[in-house]
Length: 294
Image: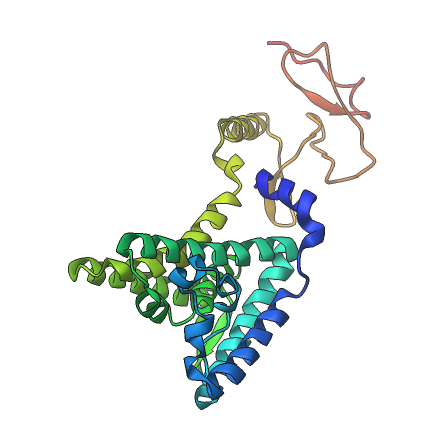
């Protein structure tokens, strides 16, 4: 968490604001390019063999989704959900962290493509890229899990009718990923595991990197033990007052009249040095009470 804060402090000014607007433009570019020239993927896709031969533009153009006007309705729905989820994450994290999350997913895709190419030592465009369909699909899956972690109770309308909370959709998606990994292992199709690992790795790294681990730190445990001890001492000393129908442990309570700070904000309390034990009194009874002797 601190590392991300340091990065944001140093590079935050370079973050792209409203990043999802530019991603939607990629969908528009994909509709135009692949509707009229489906084979353009051979010149724009992440072909590592071609990249190593100097066609470095593929490291950027592979982000253009492989879509066409024939599926315009589903493309529109997917682009809309992508845009909505991305904006929600940007509102929650800020522009820099969304940029970091998105572009780290892009880098993971590129690394995965190089790994596949290195393992098979062949031009793997027909295997890796077709398997992925579109790298934006993997990035969308990663962002969907992040959205579900932040807004678990948000409801999506399945078929525009059935309301389902996004946390349940995320659990179902995760179960499907695990099932697919199992099938790939059984069928020894290890290439199929790589896109799944890519889609989950970015989410898991970012999720665990942004957790607040102070809750499970030894200092936090010590603080909780001390707090419970103080609560128990308050109960033993009778610092329990009924306030608005609830039993409340007060910070101050007069040992004579029982008044506390809840009764009057202007009341002042003092401990008596002549009493044996921690007995506290309001100013009215501080000098008039009978001292407690053990």
